[in-house]
Structures are given as C-alpha cells and as structure tokens.
Length: 209
Image (tube, rainbow, N blue to C red; front, side):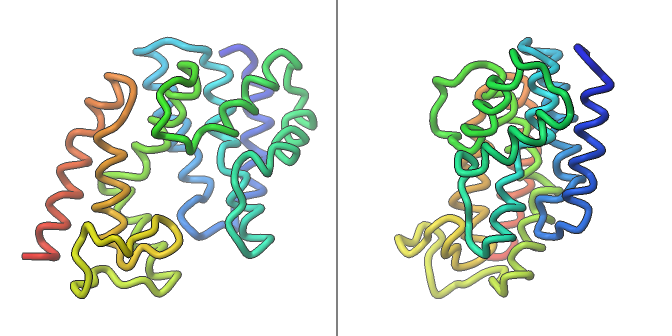
C-alpha cells in the first residue's frame, strides 16, 4: 500500500462520520466494499491505494442525502469528499483520481470507465447482493415501510422505479440487484457473484411459490 498512515487516517474519519448511519450504507458496508475491492485488485490490477481510499469515501453522498432529506447524487457531493481527503493530507496527484471514482461509482451500466472505477463499482455491487445484500435490502425496506412482496404488480411491472418506488423488496431484488449481479465487469467479481445471485433468485422463488 502506498501510504498506510493516510489510509488509516481516512478510515478513522469515515468511521466517526458513519457510526450513526443505519440505512444500510454504514461503516461496515464501506469496510466490506474496501475488502472486496482489495481482493479484486490483487487479481485484476489497478492502483491499490486509489481503489482502497475510493471504497472508503464512495458513499459520502448518502450522509448528505440524510442531512438534506432527499437523495443527493455522488457528483453533487464532491466538494465534501475533497475536503475530507485534503484534511487527511491526500497526495494531490491521487485526489482527482479518487474524486473521479466517487463521481462515477453508481454509473454501473457504463463499462468505459478506467479499471479502478470498475473495480470499486464491482466491489460495491458485490456487497449489495447475496446474503448481506438481501439483509441490507430488507432492512432498508422495513425502515421505509416497503413490503417484502406485493403480488398486485408483476415483478417486471412498468410501475417499478428503482430507489423511488420499488413497490416491494422483491421488485427491487428482481429489477436491480439480480441484473447488477449479472453485469459485473471483472472476471474475479463475476466469479464471486455467482452464488450470491443464486441466493437472490431462490429468495424470489420462495416468496412467489
């Protein structure tokens, strides 16, 4: 790792910022994404230092969203991310690379980004599927009074709008989580996702048996 002291400093700062977050995008999520990203990087390449820090700070927009009371896009929170990195003495030549990844980490239908961005995207997606992803989804839906299933609408209903009107947890799993799990960029992440996607498909089948 390029500079472990800076990574640890950022990690401690992020922990203090996210320790009271309870929507599923908490510090534990950030640590798991970082762990996934480091594992993928070891097999696929890329700048490990940039990838590690990007994974730690990628969800700052979630905190800003909570503060504002409405969803705020990652690109709208780059000033906040930049200030955190500057406060932690991040090297100037790495700063813009990290901001680029944070800005684009949710654009998961575009595979033209650099390797570091695609690795963080894959790492984030891996934590949003499988057993942990299912648990996070159900927790989020419970918090927002969204039912587990809603059989008044078919799973492929045109009424479905991701994150805005998911209808039910099953609709979100079917329309967002499973497709994302099947659309990963790196071969390492694709292999990691196979069992996770199968678990989600089995959950849907059980609910609609």
